[in-house]
Length: 298
Image 1: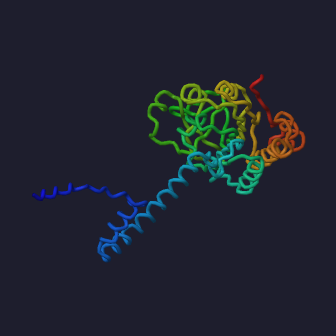
Image 2: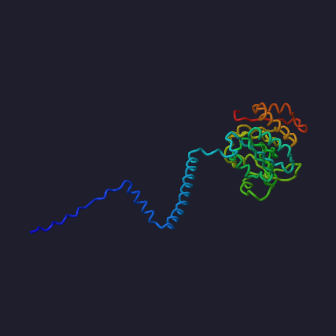
Image 3: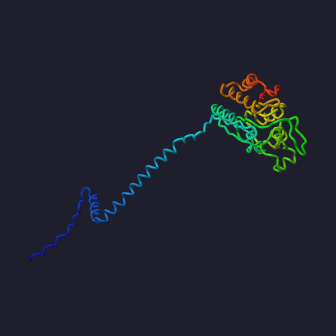
């Protein structure tokens, strides 16, 4: 008998992966994408790649900027000093040539200059003057011994009073009630301004002058020295002024000479003051008037 043939066992054959099979599979997947869809995907990826590149570029710039020290602000010179010209006489005795020349001398000496006209010279201006941080203060204001308070009685005759630029009014009731301010009136102007006396300066002056130099350009600024001493006690480095009456023309001329000798010629301030006294001389109208100075070291 013929034996039935044994069925052949099915032999599984394993396909060996082709080299680069993954790439082939991916390529075949991309080729199966419809052409129109492929074009759309490419167009979509272009702006994404551009946006990513732009983001990385800006991020790099910001990172560099954060590591670099910021540039100093324009005009912010740490060595620059500050000066203020307080011109309470700007209306009654204007002298634009003095203001222009003084500003030029100060600017050339590396000062930043602030100029204040009469309407800005208020009682509160004097109150907060030490807090402003000026290195040099030019008080082109009326000054003198005594200030009228109440019904015209003159008080503080042993101290210098300064004229504010505000005409007497009902402002500052507390200060007027406590006789800290009064009226300051000159013969030439016949206008009553608020007067700042020694008691006001003692009780109301805020802050510290922090070594500032103060030039009192008005009359009798150093006829007595208690007001100058008060400025020194409040931190001023030096106070210079006249020991008697002086005309606006003479004080302007002498102040310019003093500034030039001190700041342009770079002489010590006491030397510049004595040179001014010698070379400018006394006021032709008040022969007994001369510059005086009081220093922090006194």
